[in-house]
View 1 (cartoon, rainbow, N blue to C red):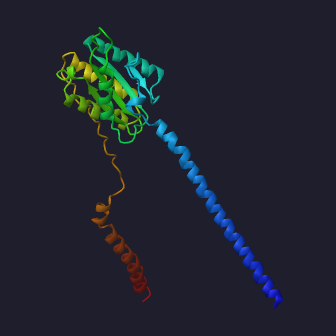
View 2 (view 1 turned 90 degrees about the horizontal axis):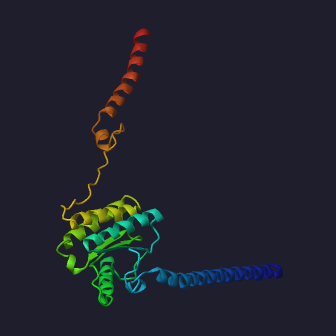
View 3 (view 1 turned 30 degrees about the vertical axis):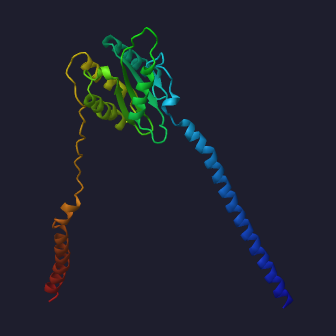
Length: 248
């Protein structure tokens, strides 16, 4: 009896120790998760972009690649293309972003930038109206905004169509940010120069691959199963009849 009592106390002690270790592990796991959230949240907030995070005045360069998605050659090509808009008295600019601040839409950011960059022009100057192209690389969203004097040349319908199709199409088929900007600028430049709107890009339809595998409908309507049963019956009955005839 004393041995049993001692063994019982030993088992109870081991059980309590295991329970304590389990509770300790859970507490440590909760602490690690809490610390991770505390450390990650400020980093995520720091990466979010609002209008206040962008320059107070239009920068010297026309390409503001905050998302770092353009190569040096691609950035130079787009910079040259944007500068060519000055011949039409338009200050065109491209802005790429990694992510937007919570509750801020890309169109809202574009309009805020228009107000901010055109609110206080240098004394004695008459800057060209702004044309802003924006790309959110996290959501692949696109937006185009133009200052009021450009409304007649670049109506809202054209800007919305260019952003939703001409800019968005290269992003949907792959992360082709350079192509997105180049195609949009070419379309807008054509209209600004008095040409006819080239229109939305043509979406190439992928031809369906012809397969030799029958579909479920073809299989269900097929008589193959019936023929298999018939052949099995014939293959069973004919040998039996043959044996019966020749065994007589």
